Length: 346
Image (cartoon, rainbow, N blue to C red; front, side, top):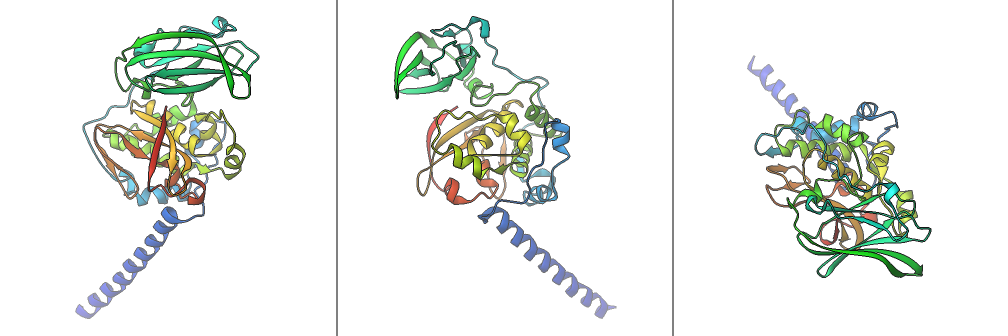
């Protein structure tokens, strides 16, 4: 009996060692390979339910690497998913748009401003506070565009600018305001032109499904981020097309449906899903080492923590979560992710 028992243990040890080798090889492939992962999404336009059914075996394996169902280690107070979605609702519509630009400042306390313009020329909306400024492209068909007050409290200037030639613009309209935002997180809990969604968005419906069993905000964050990592792949063709383009605006639902995008798309989709579930998320752009590659990622703020092999999200502080790097994208396309230089926050 003893001899049989020893033989059984040795066989078990061999199986265990083999399993560890296989797991280590797979982990290296996912985290370090320059080849995109095989967990390629096949989502369609039929809705979030169809998308949920397309999570591949590769996606399930990735979740396993993050610690199984808990997707890593989380902590924090009890979390209750919200029953509604906060939306940035302007007091102006397409009918209110004018040639010189209509600016709605009635929502400044909620952390955003809206503009609508009817003009055949190229239009930009400039938001200034102190030494900082942001420029947003505005369609000339009167569609309202919502922009975040991402520079905190202070004296803001809002300018509607019309292109005259080259990079030259002339001011059509302007307003100034002393802004006090009611909650510092409002700009990062609402949709805006860079992170646009509504209560019926497919990505919002999916986020609601993902967080329904979350015990804390870390669980909710992990569920959403791991879903994006497993179901969206880097679009090399799109990256080549927009590399020298200006004015590109990501569309979270388009990224959700196609299952592919560039770093800006990853960040916008992740932020949209998190914001819809009351988790503050900033869409960040800036530069990444070693060659100062222009890149985009998100920063999150949770009442709790989330740690796994890739992310270390601390409690009640802005923590970086780079969803693009987490997919195993070729570092030559988006840098190595070791050093970041923040430039813009949306």
